[in-house]
Image 1 (tube, rainbow, N blue to C red):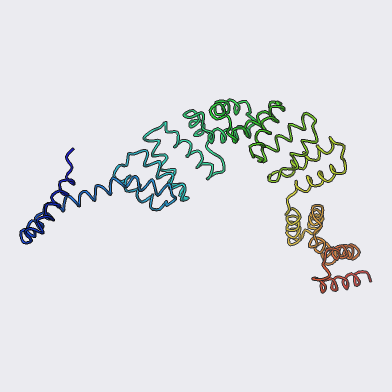
Image 2: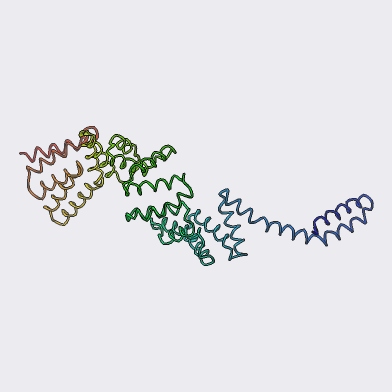
Length: 373
């Protein structure tokens, strides 16, 4: 193949030799050479840069230089706006830079060109999850049809089916994915709640121990192990797994399960403690505060009896000093009941700190003395 760069190199070598033989003649030749071939050299430089751009863009994307990668891919896309691969790269960059709307637009453009593109269906479903907290089921189903072995899609779909107790449907999805990757830990995790729902407890225990041996002690593993051991009346192992759970959003259910396990072991003392913890976990830490605000709103509206009832309801959830004080003040100033006012001021005293609230203690004690006169 004809290579103009090689020819230029040969001519340059000849001119250098002539420099030593005929200096004046050489200068004329050199000027002519630059006039003739500098446009070609410039063109080669431009072509080389253009040819290297995809490689540079990919390298910047791979190394996390997203701004540079986006600029380079944008140049390529401007020259070839129908290129699906470029749309996918730009969508990925946009998503990683937090521009979910732009990423979504690129993926939609991909589907306009290629309606069966698996990556676009999958990523659009996951973008819906990041935006609304729930992935788009229809997009996930389509992605699963295009690639039944993709673990990410199967896991997302299984979790959606679990919420509607459609465990049999989830199992059908899971089977081909597990055949494709029998050691995938996330897929094995999904297998456990399906097994519990089907009452295949020994199978769940085997899967759970396989995951633990692989270093996976996620809540879903420990919780389903605990449930399965409990159902076969192995309370000791059930308790062990329940107590190992460190991260769960539903502490009420966890404490209830621990209490049931202690009762199975006839350890009623610890069962009481777990049940008390379950009761406490079932109530918002701000419930007493809400009742305090409700009582104050009633009081400001002139509904003193309703205010009194709301304050006292709040005390059922927390030994709250502010509520005791509000009740005492209500009895003293609006309900004209000195006896109850003094009683609630005394209970309020029990919530005060002698070291930091000494003046308040002295004030309340004097008030109680006055009320008892």
